[in-house]
Amino acid sequence: MVIVPATTGQMGVLPGHVATIAELKPGVLSVHEGNETTKYFVSSGFVFIHANSFADIIAVEAVPLDQIDANLVQKGLVEFTQKLSSATTDLEKAEAQIGIDVHSALNSALTG
Amino acid sequence: MAMAALRREGRRFAPLISPRPITAVRSSPIAPSHEDEGPIGVRYISTQVVRNRMKSVKNIQKITKAMKMVAASKLRAVQTKAENSRGLWQPFTALLGDLPSVDVKKSVVVTISSDKGLCGGINSTSVKISKGIHKLNSGPEKETKYVILGEKAKAQLIRDSKKDIELIITELQKNPLNYTQVSVLADEILKNVEFDALRIVFNKFHSVVSFVPTVSTVLSPEIVEREAESGGKLGDLDNYEVEGGETKGEILQNLAEFQFSCVMFNAVLENACSEQGARMSAMDSSSRNAGDMLDRLTLTYNRTRQASITTELIEIISGASALEG
Picture: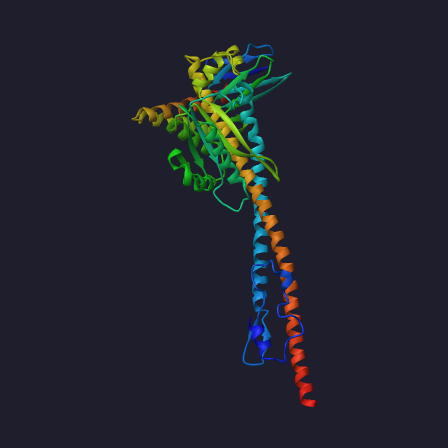
């Protein structure tokens, strides 16, 4: 079974799940195979769940959790928060907001 | 012609061999050696010309061999990337299908080609296919525009289809290809070009000797919805629940854009592989040709050299016998 970070929240996918197309938000993807769990941080993407119990997860970037550096995450979070406060145009605000979303998701992925 | 004049004058020192000892190599575009006429009675055959040509052909052979090695190493580097990127667009095709036959009004042909030459015929085949698609898709109410990636396609298409070109992008391979760069490119194209269907023309890499020109079609979200509702080839799409987002249309929009960037990424990588592979085989056949040419020139050289030695000997001997007798 697989738990994907969809935009509507964490979604668990088991065989027999109804056919779905879901967009992903930055978060933790965990793959449960028997007793083993592998966790990845996914930046965003899509998951297609087909009617024949196949699921395709397409991510822009996916990193195993143990390859994430906590210090860089903190630094990035601070940097993007600063950018948001100093942003003038809507585009800059949106970009800064995206940076904050991704870094706080990274943060909670590392802690939670 | 000079020989004929000499013969008319009754020259005694005619060489035993015919004046043009190189008749067998008529096919070579140069006259490898010629009889120089110096002061009266002196005849010498120059091997200098043949020797110069041999030197330059040998250099060319070395250069093409080196280029082949370089292309082989570059191929190895890109090949793993290309094979890994194939998994990126396969889920999209599983869901949305690759439907080049869907009827659309505005199609945009994205032609991917190389910047550098000496890579065989792959760029010409891509351009030929792009032009073919253009012809197929033109008619009343239908139009086709080009987006060109790479210098070689630009040079060929700008000649006759200048008014149909929307965007030209070159120097793609200055930095190693990565997804970020391609997604920025895809973004540019999506922002600036209106389309109902995007047809990406590239050379798919099957093996080092086989590159197949391929067309991947990405449909715009409106067309996807139309096809899904009309129950055509995308009829199954409606069976899928769409999670999140406000409307299905929004999700489909994101999906189409993501699909385009994934397909582009794979297409650019595959084309780069095909380019290196084609260059390897072009340089290989060039080295082989140079080797053959060198063999023929060596034969010519030896014949010319032997002819001049024989001439000298004859002159000496005739001179000596004239003195005695």
